[in-house]
Length: 93
Image (cartoon, rainbow, N blue to C red; front, side, top):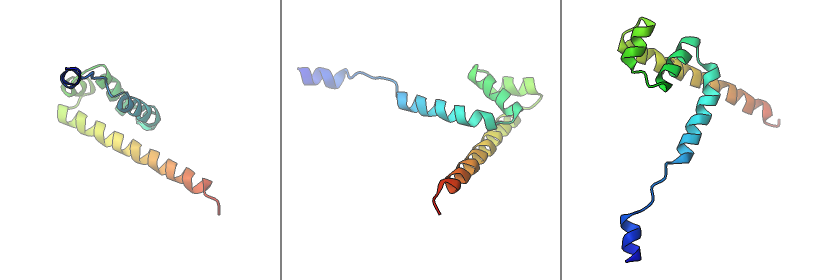
């Protein structure tokens, strides 16, 4: 009986590690985002749709989405470059 109860009614907790990793990633990435992309991110965090964001920024839904993901990718690449430079500087010769 106890094993059946455990099997059928397992506790489901949110995956806090994923949420923490996402938050840390945002904390490190946001400073490298261009201002318009950061603005879009804030709209998304407030649950605005891509259509609403595009309208507010004078873009189509598709353009807004595309610019956002391109901007995030560029910021991520900049962050990786800086990180790899730090690693190279810290390596003993």
